[in-house]
Length: 223
Image 1: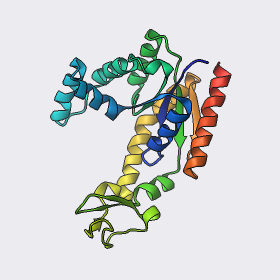
Image 2: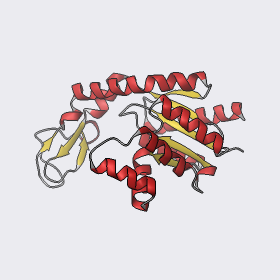
Image 3: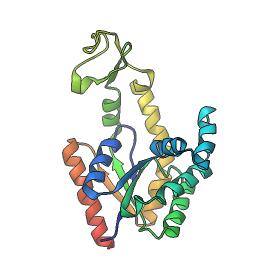
């Protein structure tokens, strides 16, 4: 059976990290996040990693062309022919087109883009529920841990607060930015017949299983 290559598209709060770990384990693919890819290249001291580090130290975004070259370098490693799952790349049409060229050059199967759909209300509920201890930095969730602003931290007794970017209005703005950036990618992969759309609201285990079934069904149809 051909390897499975995936791209995860999902807003903040969709659970990409959790579901990616499940898919990685069940499909035997390599999970590659943009952040991990950058840190790995910097740690290894590659020429591309050193260039990326210059931008990161200056507090600047790593340019598109450099991210693309880093992706090409990472996908060319020995663990990737078994299949991979990209999280955070591509973010633009230019990156998507570059990824297509990389995949062709490396003679890999075209990736499936998994569009993880979740309502704005649920994203706001999930992300605005995050709470943090000002003293020890431990993160809690209002809905899971029943810990809110004003409560003492159960770890150290410190002050519990909500970060400014976790307030509902900030979460909604992050969601709008994501939608503006990602909508063209959804259209792009839809036109390429490489898109799976999955509702990711609900219990984590059930959603992960639904994602896996959708990917396997699409793979069978393609194969």
